[in-house]
Image (cartoon, rainbow, N blue to C red; front, side):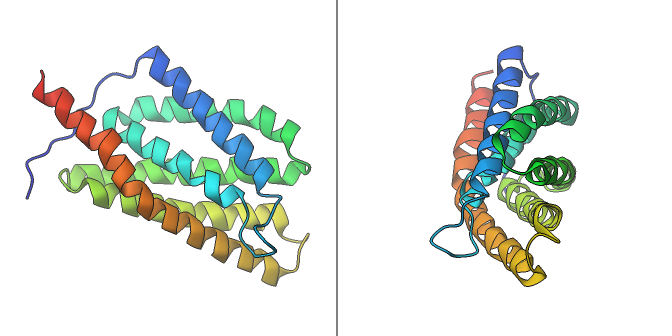
Length: 193
């Protein structure tokens, strides 16, 4: 068992604004790309971009306090609504995305910090479990708000299943990135203090 203890520091303005900018870009591009399926499958291009928001949230959650991360999340959500409304062809997609993002990201943060508190050395557990569970909820909410009563339910459900499977696979590949960015840099900072 590792003796790793996460190091929380104060989020500076540059990091705060960068996080907001990245959230807005990820959400906006995902909302646009969800309109396009990959080679007539049930997988949308939005599924390839959107998981980055969970990776970003987990990196912030590893390095900063829950209060600071939630502040950045709220600001990002508010600012993402405007370009999402402008770029999408359907207002339901924008509201479905923001609604799903709101619920799932708060859930991701809650689970992440609970696991961080209970198992501080198991960084991979908090990253993997919080992201996988929150993305499932997110994908379910999104496809049911955006496409229920627009597409046959079978298609809505299949879009949910296949998009989530892609997001789940991407979240597994995100674990090494999370380690390199959030854990490795935290250890280096702690060593040089």
